[in-house]
Image (cartoon, rainbow, N blue to C red; front, side, top):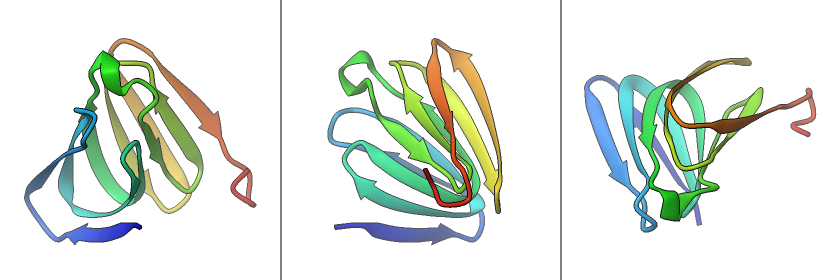
Length: 100
């Protein structure tokens, strides 16, 4: 089951069952796909992921960011993505036109 949500303005905080937290800054569109996976279609998020939620992922059209128990931010617009790691490490996987 997935949940597609949009935020016109302001901030929305989402806490996942494993303790991962994201703050979505509007305008933005996000799809919550699983307890450890969210797809950011457009917009900006900040994530704080505790060690027990290691492996939490933020996907975009051009990049998948896998958390390694850290704090990071992601900005996405169309096929462009930026990742900023505030503390710790992430794995970033570039995607081709087919999403692989």
